[in-house]
Length: 287
Image 1: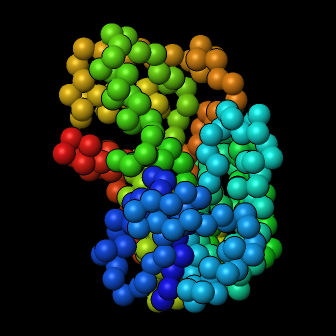
Image 2: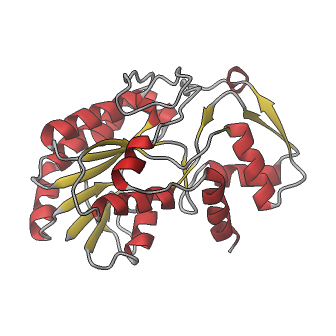
Image 3: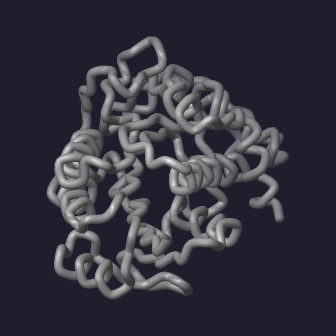
């Protein structure tokens, strides 16, 4: 099968490139908005360009790892966030091939106190969340057979992310305040990439919306302590603070744990705990 993977320079896209070597029966075409080694240029908001690419390479499946993820900046640049997170999904979904798309916990309000299921009411509180929800709807309208994977708290050995930031700040600062009243599940992008390959290679195509994160829950404070312990950061004191002390520009979900029962039952998989994922990522960062 010929598979187009967009957003291939990002965290998830980079993990897809690595894992593709373990799934050699398919041919992969990696693209992003900018060209790099092994990655071609493709603007997913350009319908003619995408159609030409799909036709030229006989693409049979699109995996969309591209997204506008700057939550704060999206509030100031709503047009761009919607163009990439929403309008592009109409383009990708309109190519007459199956699509796997990655969405977010931000489609929910974050006010829940139990893990969110796929069937729970959506109520995004940010431009970012609203743009991602609109993208889900546009994709399903254009491609009812699509698979949407909602995830949360993504990190990787590639790109910029919370894990790398906490390691850097832990080495630079004597004291660090990290919020403890936001609860979620850190998700290693390599595990999400493996989940995508599980969907791709399932003997039966299982369309629909699914939730995927690593197992377990923690606060950003707990996550930071684990990062520092594995990174050997000992001199920095990490202090738990409330979200209001941090003064976010944009609201963050206070509880964004996703229920993964549907994915596990449908595809018959076990999902690693977030500490397991973090340990594997830290091994790569130390290498």
